Structures are given as structure tokens and as C-alpha cells.
Image 1 (cartoon, rainbow, N blue to C red):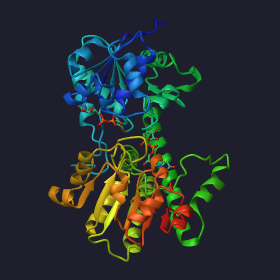
Image 2: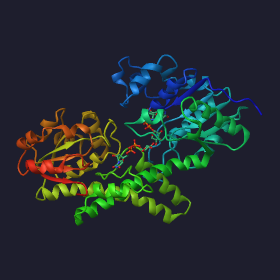
Image 3: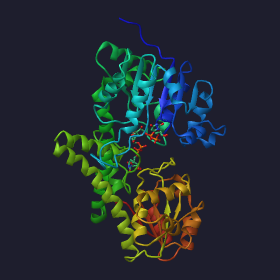
Image 4: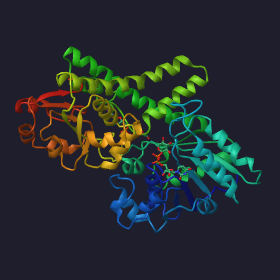
Length: 467
Ligand code: UDX
Ligand code: UDX
């Protein structure tokens, strides 16, 4: 048996939501390993290096403390990709894998061009053996392509490819990294593959119990990540489907969630009905799963999972349609306050947020939107709307106002729509809000965060999801 590989230096390509926090925690927990996070985006790297930790490019509770501890000690952020690859025994690929917007698989398949570029760069730069770790979420069997590219340079080097998907959720990323339910590592089944796999397992064992570190073959690991996100999203779509039924039948979706969640076989988590799931992963990963199933000719499997997305689109549309309908079938020229823009609370991330689609729908109906979110900046909100290409940039800026004071957003409005479940929304002086609004005053709560009975007593017309 050959000696185990001890890793002294790690490089991570991609300083995004996944790469940044993951590497920060590895560096924090393994002071003997030098961790260098590289990114081609200079601005992003500058922000990671900003002396003022409030300027980190990603907001995650607890992240700045981790960065403060490790940065400059054994955690480094740089734009020098080649140098970092050259120095490392292990290279994580954590670049983004957006849904393809062109060609075959357009709108469904994951675009792997950045991952391929990384593999080519590693192959070109490497002067010593490398363990390459897929951190990005990738279609099953991508490791094979990466291996082929790595070996195509014809260098006499040993490249091992591992799959190590990330299960962290935004807003709790640091906590999820410190105390993961499990760490999943897929690797080759031969001896070289197992040595590489053990090298990565040893790093995590620095702070994670060995029995929570699962090892599988590469394909199971890759497919587990897509499956986990598909199951989670499916739970949200399932409860949202029931919410529509509740609104017609007089049942209450939160009561149902509690009743079924106490069944230990079902469990209580991920049963919160909402205006629809968002985030960078759920939709992208399911589309990817659907595409893979289709490409193997498994039409029924593809249709089954696609329905999770269709239900989510329906939920967003249903919420927006209901606002228009309740406001006497027209919102043209009416001020509507939107509370929340992020795809969930405790993050400034807006990717695929339901708020974007609800806003677009209401703007098509010529509403005047006033948006307040405690963490999302105005430029981001306009960028999200511009990206849809539904109307001109000027029009978006004319019809949408972004404000820093929630009371200003709600003052003189016909309706308030709650899109994100920020805790602070529960603490507002709703009596004062009511007095400032046009009557009848409506609250459409897309997250069921408000106390509907209390709002009703004040005089609001209140509509929660599935109520
Ligand atoms: C991650 C995963 O990689 C993705 O597969 C998963 O499904 C979601 O989370 P994330 O970290 O959220 O992506 O992406 P992002 O925040 O966009 O960060 C990726 C970074 O990689 C960006 O900063 C980008 O500049 C960088 N990048 C991209 C490179 O440095 N080189 C490239 O070639 C491409
Ligand atoms: C998800 C997975 O949880 C994580 O394991 C994976 O690595 C990345 O994708 P994330 O996108 O950060 O994480 O957020 P998550 O907390 O899963 O929420 C996703 C969306 O579902 C949010 O819009 C959220 O508001 C919504 N949601 C979640 C509900 O509407 N109801 C619920 O009960 C739970």
C-alpha cells in the first residue's frame, strides 16, 4: 500500500457563493493547508481582499469572522489562476454552470464551457500530479470529460478527478459548512482513485465526524447532488400545489404542513408554502436532470421532474394574478409596495427570485412598484428586471422605485406584497402603515409571515398563501 497523500496546498477556481465560503472554512479548520481562491473577476477578488470585512462580495452570517481568522494566514484571494494551480496538489473547480442560453439543450442543459476551460487550464499549467475536485454542480458523467481533457496534453502526470458536491444553503452557508449533515465524495474505484478520495476525506475529517463523510463512485456522487435538489424543490412544489387547493376549499396550508410534518416518515422541513422557490440551484438543477433523462430517452422520468418547475411557475403567476384580480381587475397606475426581493431571507442573492417574475407580471399590467429589501441594492433590482428584456431600461427605472425605508414604500400604496420572509417585516407598526395607505388597503403575503388575524382587525384585506 502506498503512503497516503497529505495535501499542503489547495487552489479553488471560482470565488463565488460556493467557492468563497467553502474555502474560507477549509482554511479556518486546517491551518496547515495553504488555500488560494482565484477568480478571473478582479473586482470580486478585490472585494474578498477588502480590509473592511463589511465589503466582502457575499453576505453570509458568520462569514466575515471566518475570513478575519484565516485571511492572510493560510487563506488567500488572487487573480493569478496559473500560479495557484501550479502550487497546488488539489484544485477545486467552483465556477458557475448556468443553464445554456444557446444551441443544443438551450434553456435546459448546464453550460459547461467554464468547467471545460478550467480543465484545459489545469492540464496546460500542471507540472506535477493534481487531484481535481468538481465542486460545481455538474451533470452525471462530467468527470469523464474532465479526465479526458486533463490527459489530452499527454503529460506524464497522474490526474485524479473527484466529485464533492456542495449542499450548503445560502443564509446558513457557514453553519452548513461547520456542521454538515454529510460530506459526499465520489472517486475512482482503483487504488489511485481511492488514495485521492482519502486525501480529500482527511481534510474534512479535520472537523467533520468520519461517519458523516460518505464515499461513493463518481457517478453516484454527481447524480446525488441533482437528486437532492430535485427532492427539496419537489417538496416545495407539492405543498404549493396543496396551497391552491386550500384557497378554494377553506383548508389552511400551514395547518396541513404541521399535520403531515409530524409524521416522522414525512418530516417537518421544506413544507413552507410560498410564492415559489428561487435561488441559483433548484430550477437549474431540475432542468439539467430533465435534460439528462431526455437524452437517455427516459421521457416519463423527464416529464415527472419537469412538473416540479411547471408548478413553481404556476405559483408565481397565480400570486401575481390574484393581486390584479383583488385590486378590482386593474393595477394600472396603482402604487404597489413590494417587501423583499431576495429569493429568501438572510441573503442578498436574487437569482431566480420569485419577486422578479411577480414584478414583471405587475409591470406588464402597468403597476407602479416601490420595492424595499433590507439587503438587496437598487442596481441589482434594476439589473434583474433589465435582464428579462421585457421592457426598456428607462421604463424599468420609471416604473420601479427602490427605497431604503419600508414605510416610504408602503405610504399611499394600494397594496403591499410580501415576497421574502425577512424577520423585520413582522416588527413593523402595521397600524401606522394602514393609516398611510389607500383604502381599501390590501396585504398579499407570499410568505405567510404576517399575522393575518391582527392585520384583519386593523382593517386590512389580508390574503396569505393557501389561506
Ligand atoms: C456554484 C456552483 O459552481 C454551481 O454549479 C452551483 O450549482 C451553484 O453554486 P456559485 O458559486 O453560486 O456557483 O457561482 P458564482 O457566484 O457565479 O461564482 C462563480 C465564480 O467563478 C465567479 O466569480 C466567476 O467570476 C468565476 N469564474 C467563472 C472564473 O473565475 N473563471 C471562469 O472561467 C468562470
Ligand atoms: C439549495 C439547497 O437547499 C442546497 O442544499 C443546495 O446546495 C443549493 O440549493 P438554497 O438555494 O440556498 O439551497 O436555498 P433553500 O433554502 O434550499 O431554498 C430554496 C428556495 O425554496 C427559496 O426560494 C426558499 O424560499 C424556497 N423554500 C424553501 C420554500 O418556498 N419553502 C420551503 O419550505 C423551503
